[in-house]
Image (cartoon, rainbow, N blue to C red; front, side, top):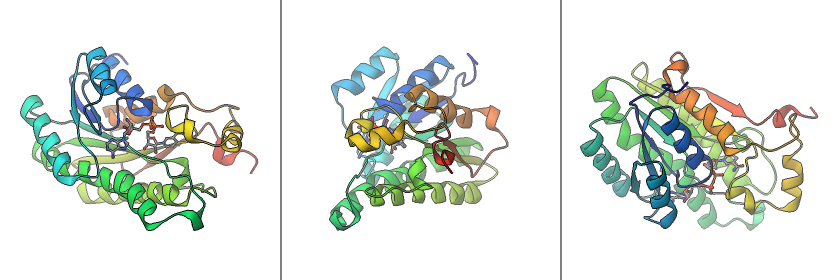
Amino acid sequence: MKNLLKNKVIIITGSSRGIGGATARLAKKYGARVIVHDKDENKQLKKCAKALKTSYIFCDVADEIAVKKAVENVMRKEKKIDILVNCAGINSAKSFLETTDQDWLEVFKVNELGTVHFCKAVIPFMQKKGTGRIVNVASLRGYDVASGNTAYSASKAAIINLTASLAKEYAPTIAVNAVAPGFCDTDMSKTWTKAVRKKATQSLLGRIAKPDEIAEAILFLASDKAEFITGQTLLVDGGYSIAGK
Ligand code: NAI
């Protein structure tokens, strides 16, 4: 597995911490030329790039022009982009009646449009090269909804749909897949209520995921080992969605 991604140029959005951070570390271990990314040029991003001896880009994924410029910078430096992982995302934990239009717009701007912006910026370069792989990060909530999470769940369902649509539109040149993580221990999980935390351990495996375990699934789909897989969303939830059913 050491050479799984040897010399592949991979952009991973939202990769200064959490699932994106674990994916960046693992991709480096698998031989990739990793570009880490965050919303702004913060200490954590610089530290992460330094630790991986790699370069970084920063932009708000909701800002289409900034995303395009960041991707063009990568192209100038690396001359190619083999893999894009869209991992940046935010949670929105409110009951349906409490959510405002602003809440809906915010979560869709980051989770769905952020993915759209990076795909739009990267796809023309992959088309020119004649090959490419994209992995989007959806969520268990894109399938198996919970109350108090409507806007987030809808944004992740949109990513599952976008994944299949893009796979169809850009086959056979570009493979587009998604990973839908179940509960995973990251900064995002610190936003969960006690009740959610308790529920999260009720997977068939009796625990929540470590970021590395989600990263392995992402990089499998990003690699040539998944050559014949496109348009799919892989649910990585430790069996949570079928427990007790
Ligand atoms: P996290 O909060 O630790 O990391 C999210 C990353 O996205 C951070 O680096 C953050 O700065 C970046 N980000 C947020 N808004 C951004 C913006 N507007 N522009 C650029 N970057 C932005 O979260 P975690 O848990 O690592 O989540 C990663 C992905 O996995 C997200 O898409 C999340 O929805 C998804 N996910 C997480 C689960 C969990 O249990 N932690 C479960 C299911 C899905």
